Length: 172
Image (tube, rainbow, N blue to C red; front, side, top):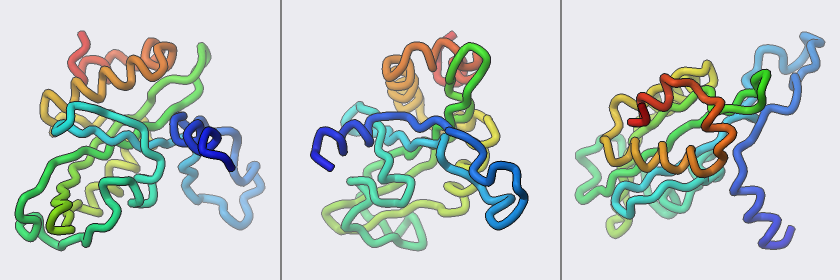
């Protein structure tokens, strides 16, 4: 795969293709498909948001080369980031952002330490998959950065998204 293909692969929201078990109810039935979920990194330090599919497996650029600590106090000089789980669903009029849930990530690159609450990440991934909006705990700047990113990434997705999402991200 050349670098252009790799870049295109990382810069798309994934949309569920079909039933992963085709309704057969056998092996794999009841498993959760993450095909329609993407991860957006919100960096309030640099005032930017971007799609990073590597965050799905804790391999985003900001998560590399750090040791996860069990307590936030063990990360001495952290920068705060948000990993936002964004689920895209197919509606009658087309795809839209159905579930959006943000999780805090603290990273201290110089000391090679980081903290994130795994239970929070799992809970919010599930909430996003269920079409819930969980962003009330995010700071206003981060919500604005996320809203601006989602709105400009694909205007059609944004226009078809719920008023609840837009309101929670500061768009009224």
